[in-house]
Length: 174
Image (cartoon, rainbow, N blue to C red; front, side, top):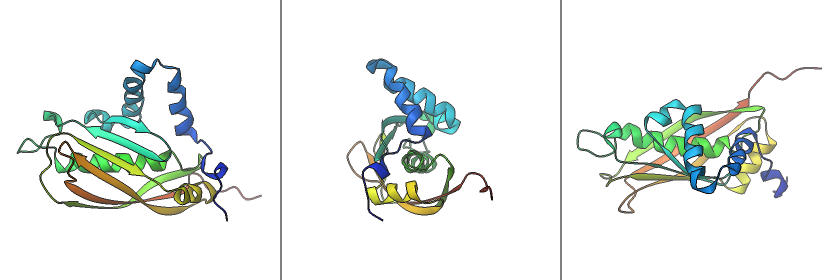
């Protein structure tokens, strides 16, 4: 099986939906993208995640260090940090899984290395080989790379997320 560009560039339902936002004026596009995605996944709205970059290859999501997501030392809460990384990895998977498949979080590991300084940004990405695998198979799993950085540029947490995909409905037998 060769990795062709066509195999990794088939837009799924999520990608097609986000492309519709290109009709929104540039100055309001980020706001509109946040509104749509926060409504689709309400908990991301509660935390006010900012969906900064959304491409099938790379997703960047930020979270501000605001009271609603703070811990007892006024930093971003551990659960909010995990939400940020999980959402970034889930979105990049969601932008690549076929329309007839369902993405599922399978495993996560989070190591808290140091105190976070200020707001955080998660960057999740997939390789062309991972994207092709999602396009060409009914089910499987991938380990999704994600880096979480704080305002100082440090990476206060290290994460590993394993996502799986399965057919969204039983196959019809003929």
